[in-house]
Amino acid sequence: MQDLGAEPEAGLDAVCALELVHTYSLVHDDLPCMDDDDFRRGKPSLHKAFSEATAVLTGDFFLTLSFEILAGCGIPALASILSKAAGARGLVEGQMMDLTHSGDYVSCSLLKTGALFSAAFAFAGALAGKPIDPFARLGAQYGLIYQWLDDLEDGDTCVEDMSGEVDAFLEAITPFKQLQKVLKYPNNVPSF
Image (cartoon, rainbow, N blue to C red; front, side, top):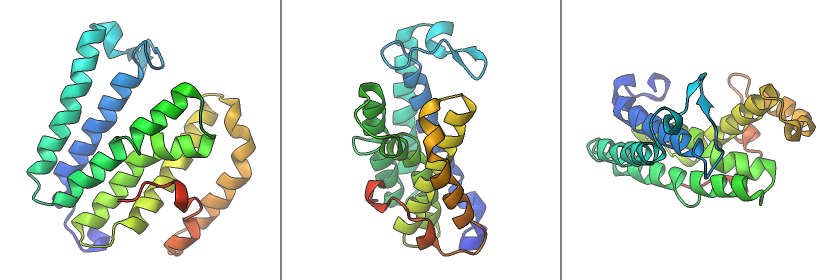
């Protein structure tokens, strides 16, 4: 933020709102109707520790609280960015693609994981009064790399064939390179 000419404290509420959406997505993702995970970060997932109803309501609470926080920020673009990232053309669509196996790995990852990274970067642009689309695209690419590395660490075999693309991306993000060199999948990135 500071490098963009904005005070880091200016983004605290936005970052908290984004983390609430991220946590909501994990709580719902662990539910039996989604991934049915019994553990999250080495501890029982929320629906296992309490109940499915508690997990659904907790996720719903986090999602609505995130927008209540953003409404108090005084920058309408922030709520728009987050609603698009978390909504039907972002996280929700990515989750549906994941559940139904209806999309390729890159498209699913750009929506499911990349959308929240994209929102984080777009928040920085919006808070600094800069054009947000280049930041959103860069964030989506970081999200793709994060998902790829996470899946690789988990032993997911569907990502092994992407190593060349990931190596090229890692080369492209060395400091001071132009943003357009990392805009590899611009058509799959949510527009803010």
